[in-house]
Length: 130
Image (cartoon, rainbow, N blue to C red; front, side, top):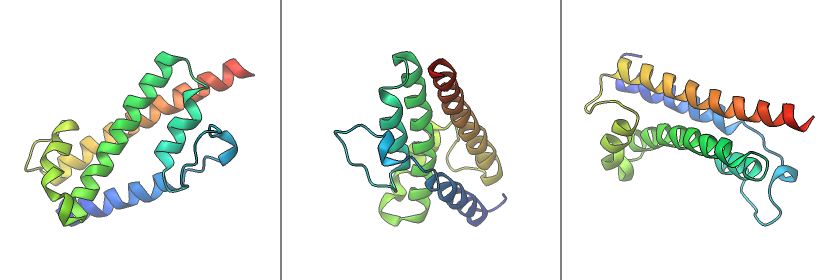
């Protein structure tokens, strides 16, 4: 990932992957209807009543990181959100203006860690529930 265009392409691919996450309606709280394209909101809703409060807080922080990664993508691809780019990058520990390769490495690492936390908490819940 060398150029801004490469960086944007990678962020779009990541967003596409995350959008494929399927959280069936049956796993959601009965009080909410959440659109299928709101995968992270659906994930949090699904886990809120299932996880211990401290585990859920960790998942919330992880999802916040993933949302910040998406905010970077939105800021790069939608002119109305462009002013948010520096703030979103700084939240991820990336200086502005970014060096695209280094920024992608940081985003990959942050995303991997966030997904690891979610996976760990879901597996813990599954083990305790069985």
